[in-house]
Image (cartoon, rainbow, N blue to C red; front, top):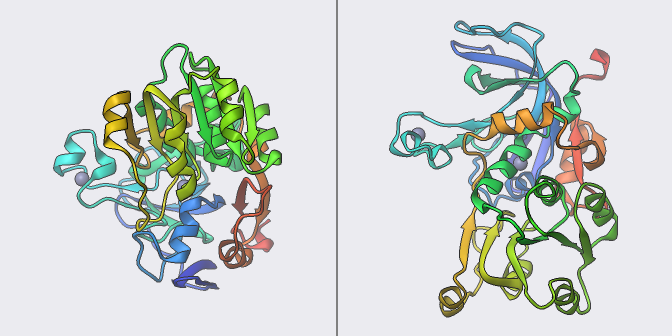
Amino acid sequence: MRAFTITGPNEGEVRDPPVPDPGPGEALVRVGFVGICGTDYHIFKGDFMSAYPLVNGHEFSGTIASLGPGSGEWRGGDRVTVDPTLTCDRCYHCRRRQANHCDSWGALGDTRDGALAEFVLVPIKNLYRVEDHETLEEAAFTEPLACVVWGVERLRVMPSDRVLIFGAGPIGALLAQMLSWSPAADIVVVDVTEEKLRVVRQLGARATYVAGDDLAGRLDERSRGRKFDVVVDCTGVTTVIQGMFAYAAPNARIMFFGVASPTVQVTISPFDVYRQDWQILGSMAINSTFQQARDLLAAGRIAVRPLITQIAVLEDVARILGRAKTPTELKTLVRPASPDLG
Ligand SMILES: [Zn+2]
Ligand SMILES: [Zn+2]
Protein backbone atom coordinates (compact mmCIF):
# COMPACT_ATOMS: atom_id res chain seq x y z
CA MET A 1 0.00 0.00 0.00
CA ARG A 2 1.09 3.60 -0.38
CA ALA A 3 1.87 5.51 2.82
CA PHE A 4 3.34 8.97 3.34
CA THR A 5 6.21 8.42 5.76
CA ILE A 6 8.18 11.05 7.67
CA THR A 7 11.73 9.73 7.64
CA GLY A 8 13.44 12.50 9.62
CA PRO A 9 12.97 16.19 10.46
CA ASN A 10 11.66 17.96 7.32
CA GLU A 11 11.94 14.78 5.24
CA GLY A 12 9.15 12.57 3.98
CA GLU A 13 8.24 10.37 1.04
CA VAL A 14 5.53 8.02 -0.19
CA ARG A 15 6.63 4.45 0.61
CA ASP A 16 5.13 1.05 -0.11
CA PRO A 17 4.84 -0.89 3.17
CA PRO A 18 2.79 -4.13 3.38
CA VAL A 19 -0.91 -3.81 4.27
CA PRO A 20 -1.12 -4.62 8.01
CA ASP A 21 -3.30 -7.46 9.31
CA PRO A 22 -5.79 -6.66 12.08
CA GLY A 23 -5.19 -8.62 15.29
CA PRO A 24 -7.72 -9.24 18.11
CA GLY A 25 -9.65 -6.07 18.87
CA GLU A 26 -8.33 -4.28 15.78
CA ALA A 27 -9.82 -3.07 12.51
CA LEU A 28 -8.13 -2.23 9.23
CA VAL A 29 -9.63 1.00 7.87
CA ARG A 30 -9.40 2.00 4.22
CA VAL A 31 -8.74 5.71 4.60
CA GLY A 32 -11.21 8.04 2.87
CA PHE A 33 -10.00 11.52 3.86
CA VAL A 34 -7.31 12.82 6.23
CA GLY A 35 -7.14 16.40 7.49
CA ILE A 36 -3.74 18.09 7.74
CA CYS A 37 -3.50 19.78 11.14
CA GLY A 38 -1.09 22.29 12.69
CA THR A 39 0.32 19.41 14.75
CA ASP A 40 1.37 17.67 11.52
CA TYR A 41 3.63 20.65 10.71
CA HIS A 42 5.21 20.34 14.17
CA ILE A 43 5.70 16.58 13.72
CA PHE A 44 7.24 17.11 10.27
CA LYS A 45 9.63 19.76 11.62
CA GLY A 46 10.63 17.52 14.51
CA ASP A 47 9.41 19.66 17.42
CA PHE A 48 6.66 17.32 18.69
CA MET A 49 6.85 14.10 20.72
CA SER A 50 7.16 11.79 17.71
CA ALA A 51 9.83 9.29 16.66
CA TYR A 52 10.64 8.49 12.99
CA PRO A 53 9.92 6.85 10.67
CA LEU A 54 6.25 7.73 11.15
CA VAL A 55 3.14 7.74 9.01
CA ASN A 56 1.37 10.83 10.39
CA GLY A 57 -2.29 11.83 9.98
CA HIS A 58 -4.73 11.71 12.90
CA GLU A 59 -7.93 13.42 11.60
CA PHE A 60 -9.60 10.89 9.32
CA SER A 61 -12.57 8.94 8.07
CA GLY A 62 -12.91 5.83 5.93
CA THR A 63 -14.52 2.42 5.60
CA ILE A 64 -13.74 -0.84 7.39
CA ALA A 65 -11.64 -3.06 5.12
CA SER A 66 -11.25 -6.03 7.49
CA LEU A 67 -11.66 -6.93 11.15
CA GLY A 68 -9.72 -8.98 13.68
CA PRO A 69 -11.41 -11.31 16.21
CA GLY A 70 -13.70 -9.65 18.75
CA SER A 71 -15.10 -7.03 16.42
CA GLY A 72 -18.63 -7.07 17.87
CA GLU A 73 -21.22 -5.25 15.81
CA TRP A 74 -18.80 -3.87 13.19
CA ARG A 75 -18.88 -5.16 9.63
CA GLY A 76 -16.64 -4.74 6.57
CA GLY A 77 -17.71 -1.69 4.56
CA ASP A 78 -19.02 0.25 7.58
CA ARG A 79 -18.28 3.99 7.26
CA VAL A 80 -16.29 5.20 10.25
CA THR A 81 -14.21 7.88 11.82
CA VAL A 82 -11.63 7.16 14.50
CA ASP A 83 -10.62 8.73 17.81
CA PRO A 84 -6.82 8.61 17.38
CA THR A 85 -6.22 8.73 21.15
CA LEU A 86 -4.42 5.67 22.55
CA THR A 87 -4.82 5.17 26.30
CA CYS A 88 -4.22 2.29 28.71
CA ASP A 89 -7.58 2.66 30.55
CA ARG A 90 -5.87 1.39 33.73
CA CYS A 91 -3.54 4.08 35.02
CA TYR A 92 -4.29 6.69 37.69
CA HIS A 93 -5.22 9.41 35.16
CA CYS A 94 -7.39 7.13 33.02
CA ARG A 95 -9.30 6.21 36.18
CA ARG A 96 -9.79 9.89 37.07
CA ARG A 97 -11.37 10.83 33.72
CA GLN A 98 -8.07 12.45 32.65
CA ALA A 99 -7.29 10.00 29.86
CA ASN A 100 -5.63 12.78 27.84
CA HIS A 101 -2.91 12.58 30.54
CA CYS A 102 -2.66 8.77 30.48
CA ASP A 103 0.76 7.56 31.69
CA SER A 104 1.21 5.87 28.31
CA TRP A 105 -0.69 8.43 26.20
CA GLY A 106 -0.25 8.10 22.49
CA ALA A 107 -2.15 8.80 19.30
CA LEU A 108 -2.43 7.32 15.85
CA GLY A 109 -0.37 9.54 13.57
CA ASP A 110 1.62 11.02 16.50
CA THR A 111 3.22 8.09 18.32
CA ARG A 112 2.05 5.22 16.06
CA ASP A 113 1.45 4.98 12.32
CA GLY A 114 -1.57 7.02 11.31
CA ALA A 115 -3.82 7.69 8.39
CA LEU A 116 -1.76 9.29 5.59
CA ALA A 117 -1.86 5.89 3.92
CA GLU A 118 -4.28 3.75 1.97
CA PHE A 119 -4.94 1.67 5.09
CA VAL A 120 -4.53 2.21 8.83
CA LEU A 121 -4.76 -0.24 11.70
CA VAL A 122 -6.95 1.01 14.57
CA PRO A 123 -8.32 -0.33 17.87
CA ILE A 124 -11.98 -1.34 17.49
CA LYS A 125 -12.84 0.63 20.64
CA ASN A 126 -11.75 3.82 18.81
CA LEU A 127 -14.23 3.39 15.91
CA TYR A 128 -17.22 5.74 15.58
CA ARG A 129 -19.98 5.33 13.02
CA VAL A 130 -20.53 7.90 10.26
CA GLU A 131 -24.26 8.26 9.56
CA ASP A 132 -25.65 7.58 6.07
CA HIS A 133 -26.49 11.24 5.46
CA GLU A 134 -22.93 12.41 6.26
CA THR A 135 -20.02 12.60 3.84
CA LEU A 136 -16.59 11.15 4.66
CA GLU A 137 -15.08 14.59 3.92
CA GLU A 138 -17.13 16.17 6.70
CA ALA A 139 -16.62 13.21 9.06
CA ALA A 140 -12.84 13.79 8.89
CA PHE A 141 -13.49 16.92 11.00
CA THR A 142 -14.68 14.90 14.01
CA GLU A 143 -11.19 14.85 15.54
CA PRO A 144 -10.49 18.61 15.50
CA LEU A 145 -14.05 19.24 16.64
CA ALA A 146 -13.53 16.83 19.57
CA CYS A 147 -10.52 18.96 20.61
CA VAL A 148 -12.73 22.07 20.42
CA VAL A 149 -15.44 20.36 22.52
CA TRP A 150 -12.86 19.74 25.27
CA GLY A 151 -11.71 23.37 25.05
CA VAL A 152 -15.29 24.64 25.26
CA GLU A 153 -15.97 22.48 28.33
CA ARG A 154 -12.93 24.01 30.01
CA LEU A 155 -13.71 27.62 29.04
CA ARG A 156 -17.15 27.62 30.71
CA VAL A 157 -18.47 30.58 28.73
CA MET A 158 -20.97 32.45 30.91
CA PRO A 159 -23.97 34.63 30.02
CA SER A 160 -22.85 37.98 28.54
CA ASP A 161 -19.16 37.03 28.26
CA ARG A 162 -17.22 38.88 25.58
CA VAL A 163 -15.10 36.31 23.71
CA LEU A 164 -11.92 37.18 21.80
CA ILE A 165 -10.28 34.53 19.59
CA PHE A 166 -6.89 34.96 17.90
CA GLY A 167 -6.61 32.88 14.72
CA ALA A 168 -9.29 32.10 12.12
CA GLY A 169 -7.81 28.77 11.03
CA PRO A 170 -9.94 25.61 11.27
CA ILE A 171 -9.72 25.44 15.09
CA GLY A 172 -10.50 29.14 15.61
CA ALA A 173 -13.37 28.85 13.14
CA LEU A 174 -14.84 25.73 14.80
CA LEU A 175 -14.51 27.37 18.22
CA ALA A 176 -16.16 30.61 17.07
CA GLN A 177 -18.95 28.61 15.47
CA MET A 178 -19.66 26.56 18.59
CA LEU A 179 -19.52 29.61 20.84
CA SER A 180 -21.86 31.49 18.49
CA TRP A 181 -24.70 29.58 20.13
CA SER A 182 -23.38 30.07 23.68
CA PRO A 183 -24.76 32.80 25.97
CA ALA A 184 -21.78 35.03 25.11
CA ALA A 185 -22.60 38.65 24.32
CA ASP A 186 -19.87 38.97 21.71
CA ILE A 187 -17.62 36.71 19.62
CA VAL A 188 -14.68 38.58 18.09
CA VAL A 189 -12.02 36.95 15.91
CA VAL A 190 -8.65 38.39 14.84
CA ASP A 191 -6.48 37.04 12.03
CA VAL A 192 -3.90 38.34 9.58
CA THR A 193 -6.01 37.65 6.48
CA GLU A 194 -9.44 38.97 5.56
CA GLU A 195 -10.23 35.86 3.44
CA LYS A 196 -10.29 33.61 6.51
CA LEU A 197 -12.17 36.20 8.54
CA ARG A 198 -14.89 36.27 5.90
CA VAL A 199 -15.44 32.51 6.44
CA VAL A 200 -15.48 32.84 10.22
CA ARG A 201 -18.09 35.64 9.99
CA GLN A 202 -20.22 33.38 7.83
CA LEU A 203 -19.89 30.68 10.52
CA GLY A 204 -20.92 32.83 13.48
CA ALA A 205 -18.32 35.40 14.57
CA ARG A 206 -20.05 38.71 15.34
CA ALA A 207 -17.05 40.90 14.50
CA THR A 208 -13.64 40.29 12.95
CA TYR A 209 -10.48 42.35 12.72
CA VAL A 210 -7.40 42.07 10.56
CA ALA A 211 -4.38 42.27 12.89
CA GLY A 212 -2.22 45.33 12.36
CA ASP A 213 -2.26 49.01 13.04
CA ASP A 214 -4.09 49.97 16.19
CA LEU A 215 -5.66 46.56 16.81
CA ALA A 216 -5.66 47.47 20.51
CA GLY A 217 -7.64 50.65 19.81
CA ARG A 218 -10.19 48.87 17.65
CA LEU A 219 -10.69 46.05 20.18
CA ASP A 220 -10.96 48.62 22.95
CA GLU A 221 -13.70 50.34 21.01
CA ARG A 222 -15.51 47.04 20.42
CA SER A 223 -15.51 46.16 24.15
CA ARG A 224 -16.20 49.78 25.15
CA GLY A 225 -13.00 49.71 27.18
CA ARG A 226 -14.11 46.70 29.22
CA LYS A 227 -11.81 44.13 27.53
CA PHE A 228 -12.73 40.45 27.09
CA ASP A 229 -13.89 37.78 29.55
CA VAL A 230 -12.62 34.90 27.42
CA VAL A 231 -9.40 35.25 25.39
CA VAL A 232 -8.24 32.26 23.35
CA ASP A 233 -5.11 31.85 21.26
CA CYS A 234 -5.68 29.51 18.30
CA THR A 235 -2.44 30.41 16.52
CA GLY A 236 0.38 28.99 18.66
CA VAL A 237 2.38 32.06 17.58
CA THR A 238 4.58 33.38 20.41
CA THR A 239 4.03 37.09 19.78
CA VAL A 240 0.25 36.59 19.68
CA ILE A 241 0.29 34.61 22.95
CA GLN A 242 2.52 37.23 24.58
CA GLY A 243 0.15 39.99 23.48
CA MET A 244 -3.17 38.39 24.48
CA PHE A 245 -3.03 39.30 28.19
CA ALA A 246 -3.48 42.96 27.27
CA TYR A 247 -7.06 42.21 26.19
CA ALA A 248 -8.15 40.21 29.27
CA ALA A 249 -10.81 41.68 31.58
CA PRO A 250 -10.95 41.04 35.33
CA ASN A 251 -11.97 37.39 35.93
CA ALA A 252 -10.97 36.43 32.40
CA ARG A 253 -10.28 32.89 31.28
CA ILE A 254 -7.17 32.97 29.07
CA MET A 255 -6.65 29.81 27.02
CA PHE A 256 -3.57 28.62 25.09
CA PHE A 257 -5.29 26.43 22.51
CA GLY A 258 -2.82 26.68 19.61
CA VAL A 259 0.17 24.35 19.93
CA ALA A 260 3.31 26.40 20.55
CA SER A 261 6.80 25.04 20.07
CA PRO A 262 7.90 23.26 23.32
CA THR A 263 10.98 25.48 23.60
CA VAL A 264 9.08 28.79 23.53
CA GLN A 265 8.61 30.97 26.66
CA VAL A 266 6.35 33.95 27.30
CA THR A 267 6.45 36.42 30.20
CA ILE A 268 3.44 36.97 32.42
CA SER A 269 3.04 39.09 35.49
CA PRO A 270 1.97 37.06 38.55
CA PHE A 271 0.76 40.34 40.04
CA ASP A 272 -1.60 40.85 37.10
CA VAL A 273 -2.94 37.29 37.40
CA TYR A 274 -3.57 37.89 41.13
CA ARG A 275 -4.92 41.41 40.72
CA GLN A 276 -7.20 40.53 37.78
CA ASP A 277 -8.48 37.16 39.09
CA TRP A 278 -7.34 35.56 35.84
CA GLN A 279 -7.53 31.88 35.03
CA ILE A 280 -4.88 30.56 32.64
CA LEU A 281 -6.03 27.41 30.85
CA GLY A 282 -4.62 24.79 28.55
CA SER A 283 -6.61 22.34 26.45
CA MET A 284 -4.85 19.10 25.61
CA ALA A 285 -6.31 17.24 22.65
CA ILE A 286 -9.38 15.08 23.34
CA ASN A 287 -10.69 13.93 26.70
CA SER A 288 -13.55 11.51 25.98
CA THR A 289 -15.14 14.22 23.82
CA PHE A 290 -15.16 12.36 20.50
CA GLN A 291 -18.77 11.17 20.83
CA GLN A 292 -19.95 14.73 21.46
CA ALA A 293 -18.18 15.92 18.31
CA ARG A 294 -19.70 13.01 16.37
CA ASP A 295 -23.20 13.94 17.61
CA LEU A 296 -22.78 17.62 16.71
CA LEU A 297 -21.61 16.83 13.17
CA ALA A 298 -24.27 14.15 12.58
CA ALA A 299 -26.94 16.59 13.76
CA GLY A 300 -25.74 19.21 11.29
CA ARG A 301 -25.06 21.73 14.06
CA ILE A 302 -21.53 22.48 12.84
CA ALA A 303 -20.81 23.42 9.24
CA VAL A 304 -17.37 22.28 8.10
CA ARG A 305 -17.64 22.39 4.30
CA PRO A 306 -16.62 26.10 4.11
CA LEU A 307 -13.37 25.12 5.87
CA ILE A 308 -12.18 22.74 3.12
CA THR A 309 -9.86 24.73 0.85
CA GLN A 310 -7.96 21.92 -0.88
CA ILE A 311 -8.16 18.16 -1.56
CA ALA A 312 -4.70 16.72 -2.12
CA VAL A 313 -3.10 13.32 -2.77
CA LEU A 314 -0.32 11.55 -0.82
CA GLU A 315 2.33 12.73 -3.30
CA ASP A 316 1.51 16.36 -2.34
CA VAL A 317 2.01 15.93 1.41
CA ALA A 318 5.80 16.47 1.63
CA ARG A 319 5.46 19.72 -0.30
CA ILE A 320 2.47 20.87 1.79
CA LEU A 321 4.22 20.19 5.12
CA GLY A 322 7.50 21.66 3.90
CA ARG A 323 6.17 25.16 3.27
CA ALA A 324 4.22 27.65 5.37
CA LYS A 325 0.43 27.64 5.02
CA THR A 326 -0.79 30.07 2.38
CA PRO A 327 -2.77 33.04 3.79
CA THR A 328 -6.10 31.77 2.46
CA GLU A 329 -5.60 28.10 3.37
CA LEU A 330 -7.99 26.58 5.91
CA LYS A 331 -8.24 22.78 5.95
CA THR A 332 -6.40 20.62 3.45
CA LEU A 333 -7.87 17.14 3.15
CA VAL A 334 -5.78 14.34 1.67
CA ARG A 335 -7.41 11.49 -0.23
CA PRO A 336 -4.99 8.54 -0.08
CA ALA A 337 -7.00 6.07 -2.21
CA SER A 338 -5.28 4.69 -5.30
CA PRO A 339 -6.69 6.45 -8.37
CA ASP A 340 -7.73 3.06 -9.85
CA LEU A 341 -9.99 2.43 -6.84
CA GLY A 342 -11.89 5.66 -7.57
ZN1 LIG B 1 -5.26 17.70 14.76
ZN1 LIG C 1 -3.82 5.42 31.21
